[in-house]
Image (cartoon, rainbow, N blue to C red; front, side, top):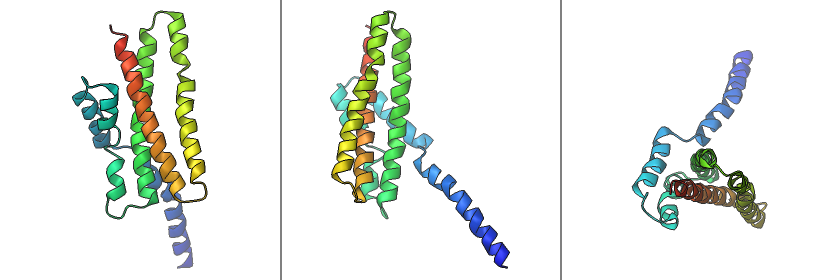
Length: 162
């Protein structure tokens, strides 16, 4: 009996990372929510798009029944993943349209631009260092900064058509 209990315990421990991983992977519906918002606000300014489209996945998690640090961080990570995927997609599309080598190099230096947002979020995390809120604050900041950078990259990509 002891062996069965031990084996069951090991099985549960080994499956825990898979369960936790699913918490951080955006669903198709969550991706669609962001895509629909981007489509719906296509004619709006960048700032209007940012205010309308950054947050529909993560923001409601704070007030959800049973919300805790883990669930809020998971929501932030899922939305941040969606924005990171969009940022990479639009960056690739912009790079492929640039014919001028200097412009391609300028676009490539976006890593400095992204590092600025990363540093902002790191400093915010330092402000809450040692508290459980540090992961919430840092995750929230990273999600917002990634969304902003993605929408800014989309504007760059769209401007290349003109």
